[in-house]
View (tube, rainbow, N blue to C red):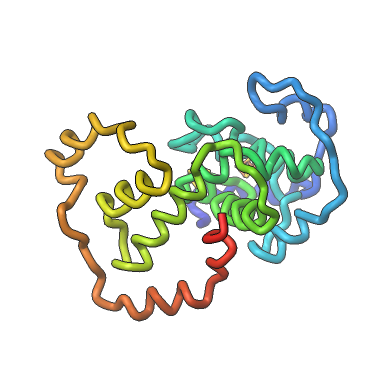
Amino acid sequence: MGAYVNKDAKKLQPSFVSANLLTDTLPENNHTPFQKNNSDIPEEIRNRTFQDVSLCYQCGKCSAGCPVRYYMDIAPNKIVRLIQLGFYDEALKSSTPWICAGCLTCSVRCPKEFNLAGFMDAVREIAVKKKVKVKEKDILKFHKAFLNQIKRYGRLYEIGLVGEYKMKTLDLLSDVETAPGLFLKGKLGLLPDKVKDRKSIKKIFKKTDKKKINKH
Ligand code: SF4
Ligand code: SF4
């Protein structure tokens, strides 16, 4: 990940946090004052990602290049900012970490080499662990259905994902009109495309703590 690294940026203090930038951190259309709390989420994120949240100096390059920013309630860099400033509840209940596609664009673009995609993973894991009620309706059911496809076939089986998600949510009719177009473009295979070494995939799942997400 060093293709876009600005060497001069490394000379800046990593812990630059300015309280007067807090207003930039507020989610759009939300003027409710945030509550600070004392839990040590940055330490937990450091343990999970091997990086310090204070590395981020809020340049915004990550959010500028994020392909799914439009669908998020809070910009990716602002989630980091909320954690830096101690507004953990707002960060954990945001839909942003769940909408993050893990594409790594932000991590590659970051002048501080902060792995924002990994950070988003950690925020999701902590939100699940703390049983936070995430703003995005049914997002955990979607993630569980997604992971079940990967566990079964080693890669995503789209029809299986849609079927399982719709059964879990009983939301049977939404987006139905998109199916013919996707099918004609070859995006919905009738049968799953399985990887050969599915035993290794199962081992990975066995080693991870999936029980917690399955409880939701
Ligand atoms: S690109 Fe890096 S330093 Fe800039 S706001 Fe995003 S995470 Fe922070
Ligand atoms: S990894 Fe997530 S936050 Fe980063 S650019 Fe991709 S979708 Fe956006």
